[in-house]
Amino acid sequence: MSAPTLNLELTGTTVTASIDGEAGVSYELYMAAGSSEPWALAGSVLGPGEIEVADLDTAQVYLFIAIAKDGLNYSLPSTVETVTTGVDPASEGLFIAPMEALKNMLAGCPSFRQWCGATTGTSEENLQVALNKISEIHDKTLARPYAYMTFGDDYNAEVNAGGSRNYFAENGNVLLCFEADIAPAHINDDYASGKAFLGAGGIGTIITELMSLAGLGGYLNITGITQTDGPGRNPKGEVDKNKNPVHYWQVWFQISWS
Picture: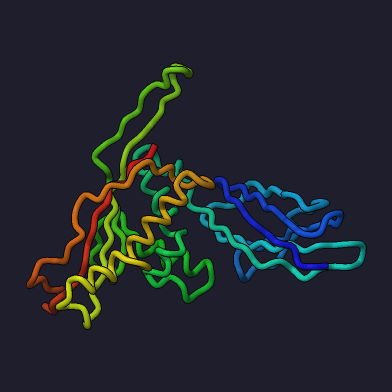
């Protein structure tokens, strides 16, 4: 038997595993809560088919594999697939929840992890590195590159015209900033340094990925992204706490949500 194909969709703390392969055989789904934990059977299906795994812990990386079974014969396992559940945004309260949801979303973006260097460890370690590179205060002790977010200047809640009197449709925004140092070879080349910051593998790629994930699998329902300041280089003559010159790019976005 051939190894099955496994695809995962995360909605909140529920994973739906879609298993594809030969018809008429059983498929078993195994999961592990982190790369150092043992595999455990999460469900089975006469397939191809789907298996739902609910009530996962928040802020946890889960690994999944699928195996085909026909009597006493087993296939090779599928490719290992992972999902990362974020901190439950609702637990943070009305005005913090969108920021936490955006933070979870950004830390889960492969392009952001690549940009900030969160790629060399296990899935759990990479997630933590990415989260640590996103600050809710402008923490200038962080080593660039990093992202900084803060409260937006707009929040609105209106009673849904066609619904219950206490059902409110909400919308608002979060302000998101990116900063990255300029490579020494590009300090005197605005075009090359700007292209490295904004182009492929940089902020442009990250923003594109955020748009592709908006509203999917429990992610923040982003309804608009507006560039509000920059992109631009830091002021000439700026120095760090050790009086060394610093050279970096910065750009701000307003992330609208509903």
